[in-house]
Image 1 (tube, helix red, strand yellow):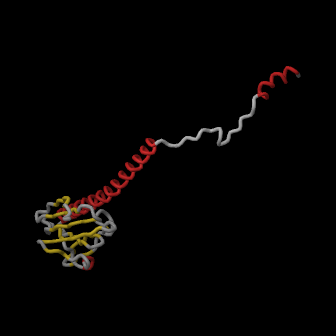
Image 2 (cartoon, rainbow, N blue to C red):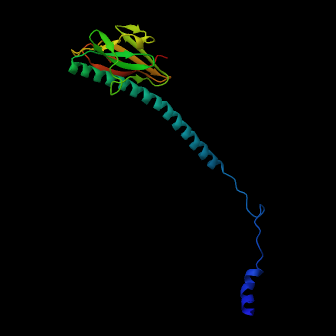
Length: 187
């Protein structure tokens, strides 16, 4: 047993180290480390701000493109079917109606030409021949725009705005040509 106790003696003879606040050297952050962290936080805040503003602009662009493409689809369908298709633009969205005899009917409850809602906060202004069309009473009225079976279209300009971002204008010409473009805000 003496060999075991003599073998353990070097381990027992070393004093125990007690870790406390006095034995660990205190170290803080350097000024450069703090500046790097502040710079990273600033860049992340800038990226987040730009991405939020950019997403609003993307939504507005997508909404203008969607309106342009769906009106184009309605006009193509009117020409192929030989029946007029009307477009009703309202403050909360737009829908398509079919002319049956002498009356406009909501014939498209589903499918591509189903009624659509504008994005929350989107403002729409419709004008024909330079005059603004009242969109408040639009859902109950006859369509403001008509895609004729001859391939013609009621000339119009629809301006869409969302928040403080740029505005987009969708225009339709009498020959059925549709375009949309960004309109600079007057500030």
